[in-house]
Length: 116
Image 1: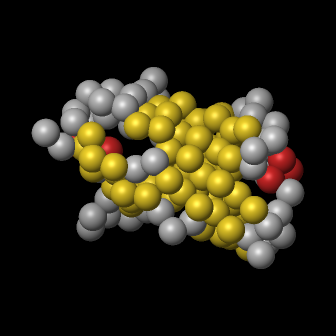
Image 2: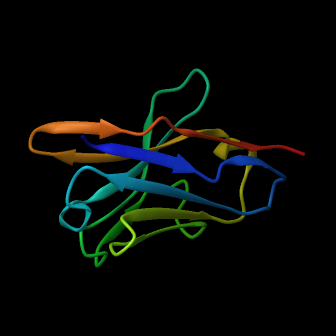
């Protein structure tokens, strides 16, 4: 079965950096676009970034452009989100997502808290 396991979240000061990882299993990872979403308390889940199957195409929410970088390692079945210049408004639970064969799959999420 499809499994997505996020890691790398934590507490960081404003201006700091974190790298999130999402380890995937149960499907042919290299064939699918992977997406990071986030959900802040009291807000709807929002798309943060996505990366195409071969990694040639990426796209970002305006709020994170220039600060976050999505990447993938198809040999390790892992997608990453490098987050730099973090702001308090980046505080959220971050989720990994894949859509395949008409279904959508989510990881359990990893908490990112940006606070001094």
